[in-house]
Image (cartoon, rainbow, N blue to C red; front, side, top):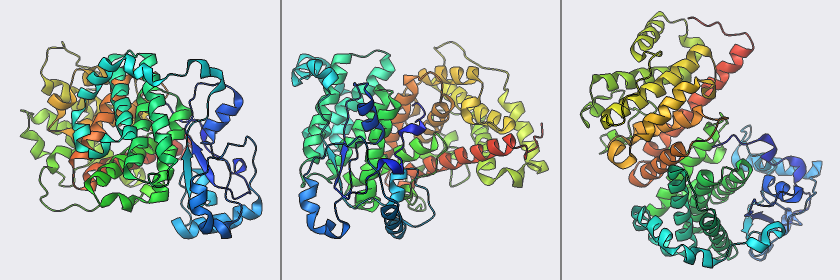
Length: 502
């Protein structure tokens, strides 16, 4: 995933003093004119309600309105002050949610609107006939993810079903390295239209299925579109939906619980990948562990190891001591970053452990053997290279994207030679850690679809298979802490306040 440019954030000046209902709008992203680009960047927000004191009475009527987006709008200082006060009372003061629009206090109601026609491309706008034309390929795509359609009974709904198929097809294309543009656009526009219909109806506006549809559609865009502004627009839309509805509402039924974990993992990663603070809505998403909960070993990794031991991993798939040693070293390095550099850098014991890590990891060696080696070998090599990338970031006081490109290229090759289900099925937590480190390390460089595919499928598999939320959100939050720690170290080093000990 590409870094999100600062220009894609919504500024205070882009808001209006008129308190009309907002309309969050799906956008096609094909038009290149300035108005459409501004629409994408501002997430198609038009205005607040005309009078806040009449908000409750007008809520049902306003929910049905589809407001056009105004190109120019202002937010008066007086409205800003009163809205900010209201926002602080509702969400707590002093916390930067990373969405400037939330800092001025959103009204409690907003709506998504269907995409407006794109004048520059209306002549070639795909019709449902496109999906019918490629019905065989669509059917094949559905067979690749039967567990999704089984786990989510509400997928019988057209919007959710199409969004799931679009997401699966997006990841399939990212792995293949090729795409049928006509089919991808047809699936995409069909999903937009169907979601728009759901969002235009008050009865389905805030349903779990509608929010799930947007979540799947958004992650499909991530994998297939690679348009940073559009990805940000739709991911922000999901975040605003959760802010409106509240994460707690996703815990009543198993379906809602899965969607909650999926959204939390995805959004924590989106923020953490660029070392951003987490939105307040997602900051309290973990539930404490229950002792001796079965199958927790599947999610153990250097990012999440509540027992402090990797002995359970030793018993899986014939893993030997070398892999276990790498996992312990990686956990030590992550704990060093998240625990604070100043408290540990001069500790002789820790320096000794770093020296042992350096010797064991053999940073000058990349062991890319023939492709017919065992899956255990490729798991070990993926873990070793991920640990080397973390080690290099610590020693050089640089963020992950500054690591040696040779390391990231070798790591991608190692991951490519594994399979999510067969190779990593019993150690999803380790795959999650490896995929996160790899994705973070290639930021600002050429995208590689295999990483998006592995990470996206891993996030879904973990979210849909665990009962305890902490198994799903704990590793992502630890990674966010690690990213913030690396960012602090880099800032201190740049300011000349940190002395390196080599």
